Amino acid sequence: MKTLIYGAGPIGQWLALRLHQAGTEVTLLARNQTYRSLAQRGIEIVDGLTGERHSARVNLVEHLGSDDRYDLIVVAMQKSSRLAVCPTLARNEHLKNVLFLGNDFSSFHRYLDHLPAESVLLGFPMVGGGWQDGDLVIMDREKPRGPHGELCIGELDGELRARTSEIKELLAAAGIKVSVERDMDGWLKYHFAFMAPTAGIIFEKGGDLGAVAADGESIHQYCQACREAGNVLRRVGYRRRQPPVFNLFYWLPRWLEPPMFSKLFNSRSAEVRIGLHAPGVVPELLEMNEEFAGLKVEAGIETPTLDSLLAGLPRPPVAHREEGVS
Image (tube, rainbow, N blue to C red; front, side):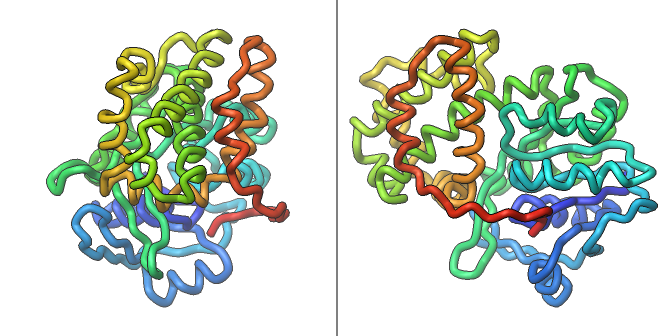
């Protein structure tokens, strides 16, 4: 499959690197300084587990033209930017398959204001990282011989189609584990129910994951916030808590919460996947929390612990950008 990665942030660069290493025909779309840097140096990523450096020079473009031909376009950008590029995608005369990759809550319906439903898939990368001392550090596996990350993907209607299998095979050839979800909408909503309290408790401790791990009351607070968000989703009809690990917040006895989740927050994986990633995800979380507020009203459930945690998130200045791809 001839593939375009639309967006050259950490996830876009990581995915372009992995596909390139597998011999896939892949192109990365970047803009402005990011494009210039990639044109000069190529992609350079530090493996968050081993410290190894990986580099590659992939095909680069600055724009998607109306006559450009790709079998698959993966939009790997923040939530608001993914919506902003929909008109550009719609102008492409040969548009086939578009995989929107990243956090979402309900805005994917707005993709369909521009794009045919049959072209759209949803997904999420189970990898994380960010910039540290000038290096792009990515954690995409827990063991040196493990798969290079995991992607969850799914059709809007939950059906399994030929293209779903083709995309899975494309990613699997790059050593990436792929989980095909029947309800990607619900999966993404439960991911918010996990990620929002996680970011909230980290910022409450000033970004110190070790401090979270050492504070049993903070971990209780974190688990309660996750349960509150999950209760809202379940009340409005999202009956299947996903991924299954989310059920730990309900099954685990309260006395086991600190020893269980202190391991999560005190790990190298959390340091990279969550610690480096959390600052950049705040604008998305705040936007999704506004959408979540509508479900709270529908459910008739209050979320005081979650609200308290999210109140401590930094409010970034509003900056309008037509397209954000770097």
